[in-house]
Length: 303
Length: 262
Image (cartoon, rainbow over all chains, first blue to last red; front, side, top):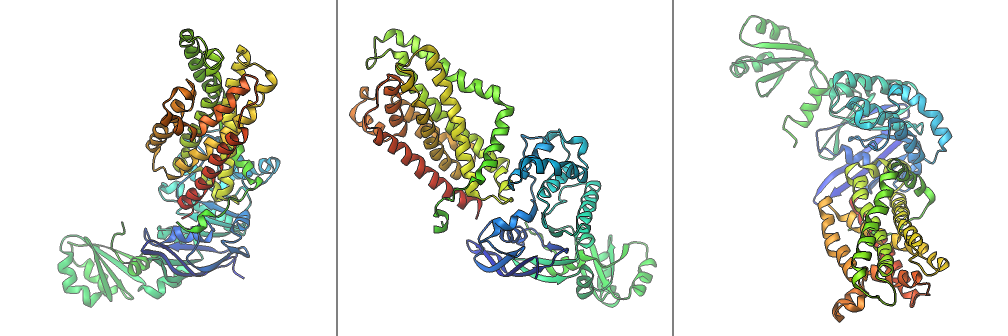
């Protein structure tokens, strides 16, 4: 039986159906990624799964309990890292953990016994007495993650956990999440960083306009949707080059601004042609999740 | 709005950690907070009581400062509840997203709002008690035993004005919105409710308006208690305060559910 599941999930705000019929089944010890452009319905899906808002249709279950009917009880063993940090600015790092633990009904002694390990995990032991405003963005994110672990959850939800972090802080967050997966936790993560999804997730679902439009392991999604080789060609005259060689040397190509994305199974001829000219610059790389994402959700801006 | 938003409040002891969270924040700032509770209304009461009181022989059979003291007791409790529910409550709900953080735990919005109701009532109890201590210190009460009844009255007032203010909190887009409530509800209550002068000084129409305001009913209870008398029409006055508080809280919960659980 999956740890978290949804069938036919729907949610409507006014005229727009933000979640338009979603089916999910997330197994224990899995890291599951929910990907999608802004406004795809990822955050609303999470709120529905947590029982924080009522669906207009469909059924859900979390940790064996029906949602939203028994979502409150299920949340006893769930940890949540929200998109926006909502740490308590009136409290120190230590007090944030203590006060949050009390919301789960745990006695103070039990919470206090857990705090040192959580501070250690978040690399914040030396900042236990610091005020929130004195912490960097990365430290605040780590504290939010530590706070979500105060009840030793089986299931962890993270809504865009590394948005706004610098690369060092992002790698530190990934390292923490891998440790948690190693401890046997189940993680559901939303992100629009494809690298993050590719590194962490066992399985992914790509959402757009309230629907899941693709699902599978990162590797399977790339193999299914994209030719294995990508050559990015850019510089002046790329348009003329595309008109001449695009159809013959690429199996499929797309233009985005100054750059031509050329997809192919065999790039030898293509690279030979490009290396023989001096105007255009190019980059050859294997296909990745971002190519899949852009192919199936399109290159238009979502504002 | 869904009819669902209007389901009855669920009452549970799970409110306690929410109350404790607010108490812990308050404790860090307790000294300036207590000073604010005490000093501001005390200066009003003493300044007006002596300054204006010297010009007035007697008001309703008591010195003006004693008259003003029972008004200040009620007015100060109301202000404390209203400010905490609006400015501090709105910070926790909308600005700091403290309530959102709590809703991610096994607490519900009903638990959060009950915790806030009881916390804000507790805080306004401190404000009311501060004035009561001044009254005792200055001997402005007739009977100590009777004046003790002011304590449950302060709690009732705290409940009433918290319930009302939480409705405004639930519909506010920003802090600026509170000015409507202070200008259109709090100020008329202070000026028509009998804080500074007896309501029977007002023209009949304004007396009728006054009779509909909860602060007037609170003062109708507080003033005789300070004079050592049993108030008249206790059930009516208590009933009005309970009704404003209960309906306010129920409506506030429904509107906050619609706002945060959509």
